[in-house]
Length: 98
Image 1 (cartoon, rainbow, N blue to C red):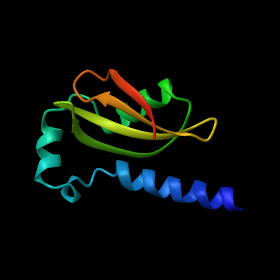
Image 2 (cartoon, helix red, strand yellow):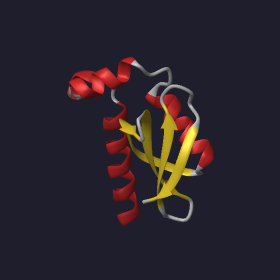
Image 3 (tube, one colour):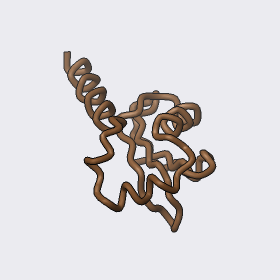
């Protein structure tokens, strides 16, 4: 039952994260979004092809001077991972354990 609760919370968090209600983002996020070629959904799909598991959070941010999607995934071993996907090219820039 605890696993079902965690899965449900993760699903809700992910749904809220990918909701295209861009008005919820501040001006900074809207500005970042204008320069992207990759969608949030594409970034999540790319992350999940590199790390098998379930995505539970994704957001647009600046990392080392680049606009990236940071996608958080619980991998098949239960470890949390952060996958950074370039918002221009769709390339995975790095994968970190959280």
